[in-house]
Amino acid sequence: MEFSENVTILEDGEKTYYIIGTAHISQKSVEEVQDVIDAVQPDTVCVELCETRYKSLTDESVWKKLNIFDVIRQGKTLYLLAHIALSMYQRRMGEQFGVKPGAELMAALEKADEVGAELVLADRDVQTTLRRTWANLGFFQKITMMMGLFMSMFEKQEFSEEELEQLKEQEQLSGMLDALATEFPQVKESLIDERDKYLISSIEKAPGKKIVAVVGAGHVPGMKRQFKQSVDISKLDELPAPSKWVGTLKWIIPAVVIGLFVYGYQSKSGQDLQTMLYAWILPNAIMCALLAALAGAKFLTIITGAIASPITSLNPAIGAGVVTGLVEAWLRKPTVEDCERINEDIVSFSGIYKNAFTRVLLVAVLSNFGSALGAWIGISWLIRLFV
Image (cartoon, rainbow, N blue to C red; front, side):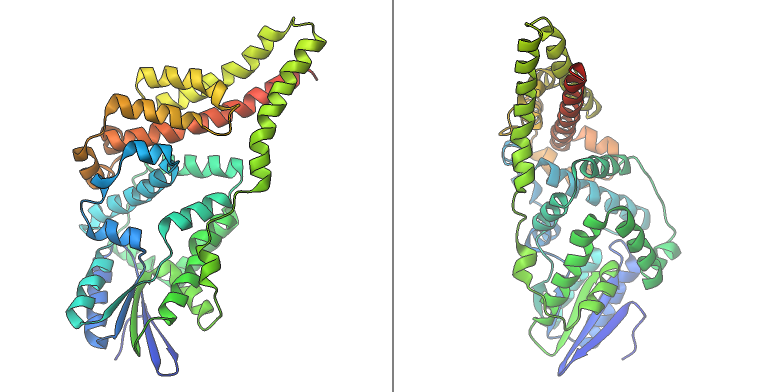
């Protein structure tokens, strides 16, 4: 059997692996997946999906099962918004080519059932991947990453079908991944490198002698390098332990702020207390309110964030985003219909703003970052008062 250069064939004893590198919005990838599975008649089909993404792809009612208040209280707003932002880019590109994102994975699922092959969900859980990625970033890298995701919602980059197919070529992919590694090495490690190991390990453990694997083309070079290498999947499945430094820092910041207030009050005989209050309250309130407004929050939410931020910045147990998110959710009252429309609305930034559910997520995340920035400005201001 002869296949295109998008199909990598690996052998290990009696087992043969046919790894199809795809673009998630390419009709040619859909057709290639169908053709390869028809030709190979595999015992097992592996797909680049975890249980969460599998349900999202196959269960159209998955969004309406979400409870916005639970999402906010459990601190999942950032991860959910990041997932939506990435999906938004894929869906926008998919509309350009008339292909639903993940269509090649759906084709693999349908073909696996048609030929009687066992199905293996070979990818790591998306929440684990996002949590490990986030844990690897420093504070200012997190700010940069979130601003990048936010700005990407405005971009309307277009590719020709020919350019899209070129993106599957290994030389092009290598250059893109090298650029990612240079700018965000921690992101590449958890988002790409770890999943390369996870995917190839899952595929090697798949039952049968003929295995077809359908994965994004960007994973294929790394999977080839990791083939027949010993990989401890349990280590890659571990959620990052809370950093002792970050945990300590959460308490150090309030202690420093309170210490500065006490020192300033005693050394100045209370004369500069008003100035110190301004130095702490103003940047916290303004930055939280400003980013909440940028997210399109309602007026009451903006005011609530401005009041809450100077207080929550001194309390590691709760963030300003939880307060603003809950208030915005109470005011907007997202409906089941809003949840059901998420897949349609995330094609455009105006859709993100129009949908009550995604607007609440945006308000919670951006106001939280505004509060964090305000806290750093406030601490700097307080320190300058005594230097």
